[in-house]
Image (cartoon, rainbow, N blue to C red):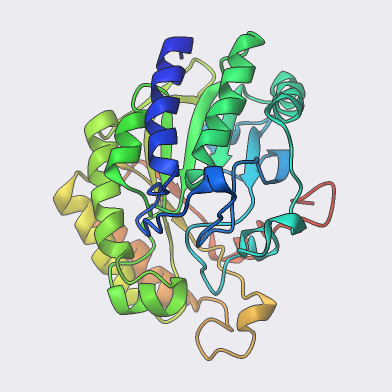
Length: 316
């Protein structure tokens, strides 16, 4: 990750941020004029937490944890989001503003104790700010493995600008059904955009992960899928798409950690946890498609990964 490469990417990303076209919503606000658009984000970094997280995929968190930067707000507004305390697009004044220097200093401290992996969690709408932080880290002599942890709601042009900077892509494939995507995340175009996202990431990385001698991923692609209540058929479509479009050699992270939040407590589907029959059906399909690389959460893990951003130790 050279200064020239970061500078080149930053120029491209800045050009897409005002008028803003960083995410598929392309709301066109002028951030340089104080406008904030759909995500209620301006030009300052809005960071909800910088912490070591040991609950990510083992190849990313290892024994010592990954240093995760949780950016506030989001380009999606999923009704059931487990990070709802920080992902809601409230007025920017309700979230902490950190300078790139302060953020880099906090990250640098964590990298000394962690696995030298830096996770950018939901960074799309704050990419100019994220690149400023990365440049500050680089000037300080730190070049961690960069993990781009995203909902999958991306623009190909943005991902192309990041090529050569991001080491490990960690996208979700949330839905295949556009009606569900609209009803539950406010983005009916999510399935189409996520498929484009995965194609571009696969072009850049292929199906493999490169590991260091300690088993920590240093380059590649991991695709996540969270199984949701009442949407087994959609999960099966997602898995079949991945196998047919790419390869069953993909590293897949199948997640059972869905936990209802207060916002969906009364919903007949989102207000309950997964049934074992639902998850078992998805796991069986994954195995029948030949996926054998990656991670499968146990159903009883639901709730173990639930964060509380009001605490200093977010993940308990």
